[in-house]
Amino acid sequence: MNQQDKAQDTDGAGKNPVVIISGSYGSGKTEYAVNLAAKSVDDGKPCMLVDLDVVKPYFRSRDVREEFEKRGIAVVAPEGHFSHADLPMLSPRVGGAIRQKERPVILDAGGDPAGARVLGRFCSEIKARGYEMALVVNTRRPDTRTLDDTLIMMGMIEAKSGLLFTGIVANTHLMEQTDTALVLEGVKAARQVADKTGVAFETALVLEDNLARVDISKVDAPVFVLKKHLKKPWEHQTEAPYRI
Image (cartoon, rainbow, N blue to C red):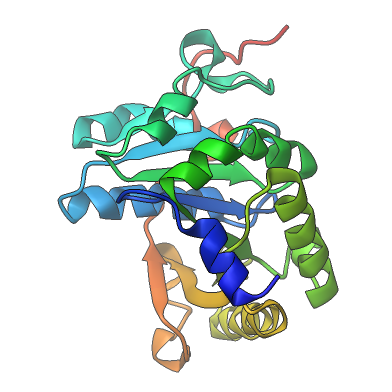
């Protein structure tokens, strides 16, 4: 599909397109989605953060619900006993969040086949509103370790969701072992994906906690500094997960 076809596919009606962030398990895409929501409200634009990552609940955007709703960010995710359930389920509010056009919407989508199919359930509404969809690439994760791996993953997500990627985001990291060389590795890989697909390279992500080890002046790319909002499962002091 050429760039003109991509532009037509993503040219929905109205303002405030849905911003979809997708990526493999552990890529950092949920932290990016959460940070985009925080930036939106800091810029004076109250927004909605929709959690569609329903299959591999390691980091969940629903974990920031209470904090964010105090700041004016509506978090759409399973609620009550199901907020930490290890179950594939959707909030009935998802469709309404996508259809409303008053607030920007950031959608955190799973990058596996099941997650892509869930995203595809809302394909028509997303296209009608207009959207941007970014793939977060972490070359230290199995699904995006090589260029071919990443292209296969992109093709799968596009085929099963019915939506097309519009941006590539570099986020190669190894948590507290991340350094400048690792970030540069990620930028190079993301640009290779962009060159191969014609999808624009957008930015490189660097966690704020890693700035002491990463010299961003050496990163020849726009850099988005991530604040750490999410916790690992064992860092939560909450009620036990609900299971059936």
